[in-house]
Image 1 (cartoon, rainbow, N blue to C red):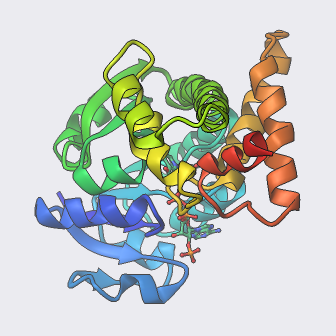
Image 2: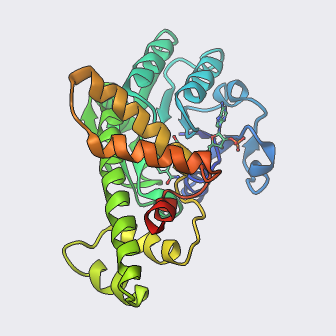
Amino acid sequence: MKAGMIGLGAMGLGMARNLAKAGYLTAVFNRTPAKTAEFTVAVFDSPEALAAEVDIVLICVSADQDVLSVIEAIALTIKPGAIVVDMSTVSSATAKKAATILAEKQVVFLDAPVSGGTEGAKNGTLAMMVGGDVAALEKAMPVLEAMAARIIHMGATGSGQATKAVNQIMGAGINQAVTEALAFAQTQGLVMDKVIDVISGGASGNWFLQHRGSTMTEGTFVPGFKVALHHKDLKICQVMAAQTEALIPLVDMTVISYEQLMAEGYGDEDISALYRLKKQ
Ligand code: NAP
């Protein structure tokens, strides 16, 4: 199966490298061409040129409008019977719109957002939550397994993104808890490496503490996962919650914090930059 990757950002680059290692990657496209330089596969100068040449199109771009512009472009040239897998984090509504556009071309669309950070993308250990046709997922599975260690079919189109929204709400709470607790630890005059080490081994241990604890307390906020991207995800969660009158106060609070960080010029930093506000 010939796979083409669209989007070689913090996540897409690691994913594409793993696809190449597994022998599936035959084509890449990135809006900023310089990021394609390391690849020895075919490099295309547009999504539509890539889509004409592969059996499976993998997408990892930023936000809803970006996914839809890529989908509209590839719909012009994609072969009937191809599969499109979008691993960006967008709304369920966008996933449904993408599926409708591609269904007219006899192409199946899977929404397949991921969790596991840039480390998971690099190591091929992502968790992937998939919405859409089961048969298409089974067909795509060997390719997806080059990038993800856990791949779960969640239900109909859009349910992958709905699950990712659940993940992003948890991520907001974990970010609030870890940054606040570590800022408090510093006020207690504790040795931060020891705090992170011992707590990581107990009931409050978690991925974010282990992977971002040391860097945040050293004042380094290299993404990782950008504040502006998590803010985008949480705004999606707010829209979804409003539709069912669900209350998500942790999300509301985190949106306000992220907007403050973005206004201060920290939107492209890792989400652990929330520590800046807690430390104040
Ligand atoms: P990123 O580093 O900012 O990369 C974004 C990628 O999308 C770049 O390759 C960018 O091209 C491309 N792009 C953006 N708009 C585009 C458009 N209109 N047309 C074509 N290409 C476009 O972001 P990332 O961290 O890789 O995140 C990508 C997606 O994965 C997002 O939806 C994010 O929420 C999700 N995600 C991120 C993480 C994480 O830890 N970073 C984890 C899970 C999920 P250029 O190179 O030209 O800018």
